[in-house]
Image 1: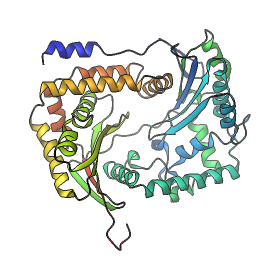
Image 2 (image 1 turned 180 degrees about the horizontal axis):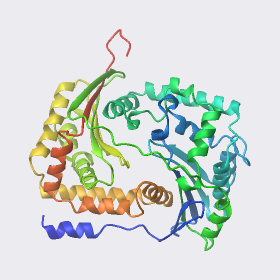
Image 3 (image 1 turned 120 degrees about the vertical axis):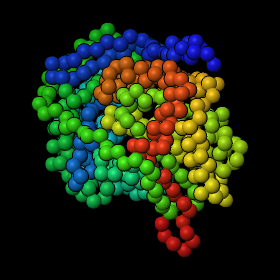
Length: 432
């Protein structure tokens, strides 16, 4: 494959549809208005720089706990009223917490979108945090923890994450633990809210069929809120622990394997190349590992690969579920053999170009709807800059086959550390 064809792929990097404008309120709130009239709807996505990394060890799960409480009563809206109001207006809402941030979003018809601003400004200003609601949600989260512990894949992924980032905030469970949640009450939730839920620690994205006065509406609801003074604490990079670490747990009825390697932050030049490498290895029936382990040798029922995108450190994880009767040691051996081969032998140009087409298509699909665009823009603005996502894709599409071999040699060996995690069937007559 010629260099000219590769450049043509890179030059075709898509852009977000519509027009983007930005403003910053006097209290520090960063606002991005994304005018895109593909449908008569508006998404409001509010991102806070508040996640698991901002918790103390004794109060693990506080950020996720507060995410729940943001729907359980504020100055204007009583417990559960935000959800009822959203549904009554024909909208939807959701929220999620990660190690680095917490995000909330609403989807409304164009004529009703300002209700999202009213809700977000109200609960940014203050929560009621009634004791009975806090205790009710604590029980909900404890049930959530139990569900994750009982699901073999969820439990394995958490164990691998904990081992990969042992001693670092990224290794802590987002949900917290039963012990740490006992230390999270109304006073702790209120203090966390005051410290991190403020305009100067947030990014608001309003996307879709926006009216001309969208900026004025945002200012009307948020400009009177006070900013803060304390900067968000810095987070050190995880310490590198070269080589493989192993873990094994017993759960379920089929063997499951997850191999994870530590990567640098998502704005590191190698990160987009590793994402392309993961696509080459795991995305689609023609991908290298899918063809070898599922189609040809029929050792696995399925496999997948994922690359985390974080501002401090990231990871590449490859997950496999074995065919009943397949020997775990054989599957691990074949996987490691293939990972070693791509670190030693430059992949074929045709193979790399296929991966680029798949990666580009995935990017376009992931930006298809307005609410996806709003979340992508919010993530980029909070952690990097507005052009991060497109620049990341372009760097991947510009990569050469030798670039993939080079990053495979660095990260699949691995030099920053890696984990081989097994979830094997329970032994007969023994508990997990």
